[in-house]
Length: 160
Image 1: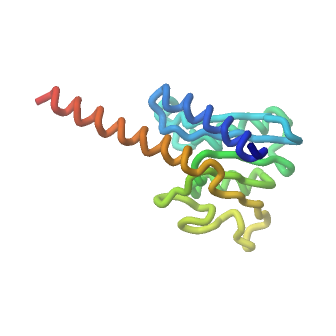
Image 2 (image 1 turned 180 degrees about the vertical axis):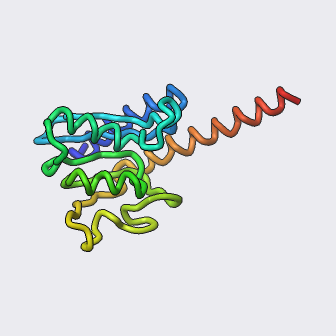
């Protein structure tokens, strides 16, 4: 197992926590000097806050841990390609490297729809590694939405 796979497995553990509470299963881990300094998972439904994505949750914890908004030597591991909002937060926090699992065809801004993290018009760019444990990350999301649709269908049938 590679180092990236090890940390992505930890991000997948965070995604599982999200799924358990009915959140979209996306998890994030921030590493500094080979040490996990922050974790996060989606809490958008729980907190009813737009910005409660896994990446934001982890970035805010990392800011607290190191006592700075600058995360210049950190690597972010996240199970799904960051959206434009999260890519913006990654740039603003000066994260050095982003490693993600599954691509996001609807909102991915680290290579799928666009690549905000390598746009030279910004004052910061990130190293990017994509597709780490991609199949497992993608399957977790696919299964979550499949189960959600089935549950809604059952509930709709029960109402009739």
